[in-house]
Length: 347
Image 1 (cartoon, rainbow, N blue to C red):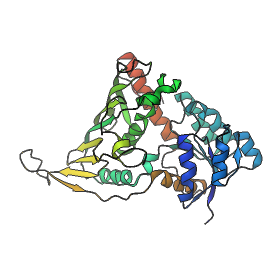
Image 2 (cartoon, rainbow, N blue to C red):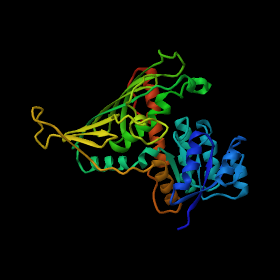
Image 3 (cartoon, helix red, strand yellow):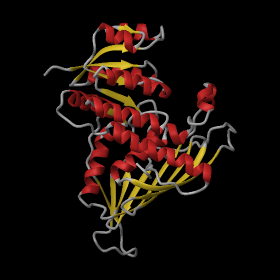
Image 4 (cartoon, one colour):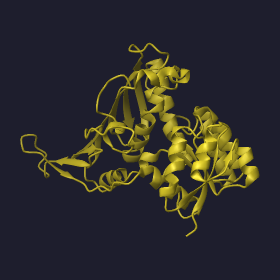
């Protein structure tokens, strides 16, 4: 089977990971790297592929089969539209765009052109998430009632030396919680309403360093997310899932999804239940669901190659990325106004 030739556009931290992991993909092969920086040239040379300084230069040299767009968020709109106009299937790193209106433009342009568009919410490709979704779908926890999620960790002072990381839109809600919100949508269902409070008292930057968010799902379940990047703690996906070797794994839990028959702990896939007695006076037991250990970024590349070949529909389409961005925007507005906000009102 021929491997899809996939370009990586943007040679920052995540772009470099995509480029390096391409060699482990069974379905994708690195076609080239496009980035205006001089530092991208030796990376491309080390990986044995051409280096182009722009998307236009890449297209002039010969279009790849698909492209992963890993540029800064503010460049997603222009880069995505250029790829769509050239008829190139695109996987755009999260968030799909900075503004909801821009994300909607990308989704509509891709639909009009008949070009496949994916959003890089890679956690959906983690085998443990596939198993969690199957467990919930077959009723292992019963009817979902409540969700609790946590993102607590301490970003170092050096992280904020880049000015944009101290500006609104670069805080843990938009930069980190976007993954958690996408997973909750994927596992529990669409979010109908949000309420939120944010604070910046630790660092006093214009961007938040803590947030508490309430969620109401369309199926009636409720949820709460507690977020901070200023607390040394083990409770975040980064610190618990052992997904990225850059983060030390703690073995703790960061999300609990409870239903009428049991409660699921993530990322361990531990299912707590009372063997049907539903009695708080009787012992509660737990069982561990089996899980495979595969890199979700590699699995995402394999899936993208299948989408390029027309063999699969996107697991996380551009429209899914738009829906998650709408929830993040609703959280921002709820925190600003102090009132509940419906993410998809009028959509």
